Length: 183
Image (cartoon, rainbow, N blue to C red):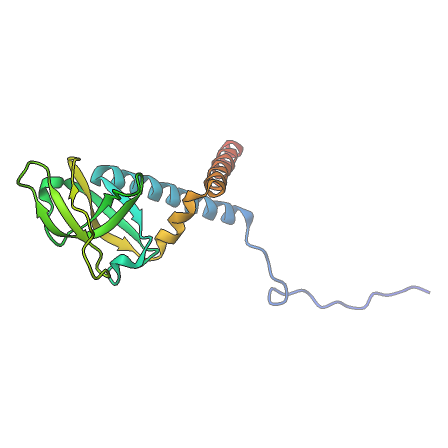
C-alpha cells in the first residue's frame, strides 16, 4: 500500500511574514550611526566656538523661570557687560566647587571689578552676600532645556560614567569591525 501525500496549499505572502533583508538593516544602522556622529561633532564644535556651558538646576529658587531638573545653557560674557536682570551662574561663596544660578538685582562695576547682588526669582529676599566678580567672563544663561538636567545629574555617579565609557567604546569597536568586514 502506498501513501499519497495530501495536497498542501501554497504559502502566500499574507500568511508568512518575511524578515527585512540584513543588508538593509545594516545600511540603516550605519546611516543612524553616521548621523549621530556628525551631530555629536557639530554640537561639540558649536560648544567650543560659541563658548557654551551647561549647568543643571538643583533647587526651585528660580521658579517659574527654571525648574529643578532643567539644564541651563550658558555663554561666557565679559564681566563688564553684566546688567541688572541677567541670570548668571556663579560660584557659591559658602560651598567651594559648587555653583548656583540667580538673577542679578544690582551690578556695580565702578571699582574695576564688578560687585553684584543676586536673588532667586522664587525667593522672598535677596541673597545675603555681595559677590565680587574676579574673573574676566561670567556664564550668562541664554536658554534652558527642560528635564535634561536630571539626566546630566546622573553623571555625578562613577558607575554611570564608567557605563557610558564602556558603551561608547563598544560602539566604536562595532563600527570598526563593520568597516573592516566590508573590505
